Image 1 (cartoon, helix red, strand yellow):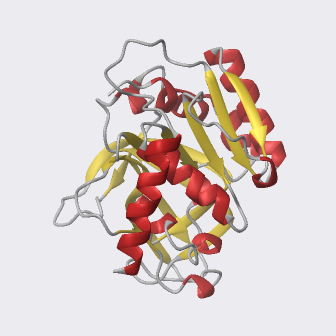
Image 2: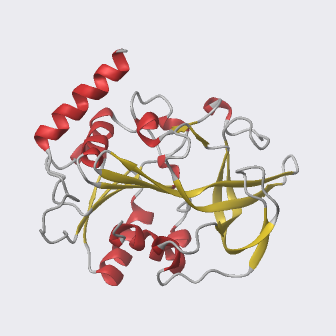
Image 3: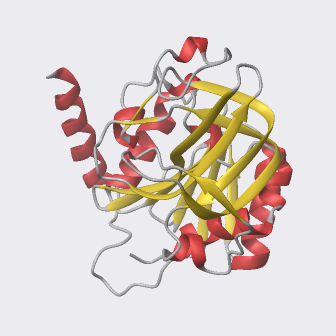
Length: 271
C-alpha cells in the first residue's frame, strides 16, 4: 500500500514538472540526447557515433550533475554500472512516465540496482539472489553474470524497425525460445566477443514487453547453455517507452556497427 501511494505521489509530481514529449502536438522532435553514466570510455564512443550517424547533440553527465529539465531530450540513455542513486532513479521514472524514452544499456539491469525502491518495478524486472550473481547458475535459476565471453544475439523480431533498419544480421544459428513451449528454429545472429552475459533476467509484467532479440551463451564453468529471450526488449510506461539492450560491456560492443545502429534506431523509432 505504501509503495503504491509513493508511486502515485511520484507520478503526480512528475506530471506537474514535465512536458509530454510524445503527445499529439505537432512540435518537432528534439535532436538532443542525454546519457547518464558512471563509465565514460564506452559512452564517449557511443556519443560520437550518435552524433556522426544520427546528427544528435549528446550530453554526457554523471549522477551528481543531472540537469533539472529533461523535457528537452528526445531520449535518455542510462549506463549505470554501480549504484543507481535515488535522484536519478526518480528522474528517469518521471521523465519516462511523462512521454520520454528511456534506453537502459547493459548493466542498467544488474545486482547493484536490486535494492532500489522503484526502479525494477518500473522496468518490470526481477533478479533472484543477486548477491550470488558471480557464481555459476543454471537456466531459470538465480541471476548470474559472466564477463569476457562471447555473447551471441538472435533476432526474434526481424520485422521491427529497431532490429531491421540498416542492421545487418549474420549467419543463422539454432535457438530455442525461452518462451515455451517452442521448437528449435534458425535465427539470424550477431556475435560479440569479450562481452558479458546476464543470465536469468525475469519479467514481472507478463506480456507487456515486446521482445526484440534474445541471446545464446555457453558457460564453460558448469557446462550450461543459456538461450533466453531477454537481450533486447521494449515496453510502454505511462506516456513514454522503456527499452533495454544487454550489449555494451566494452567499447568494442558499441563499435560494432549493428549494435550502435540498433541504439540509434531506438532513438528514432516512431511507434
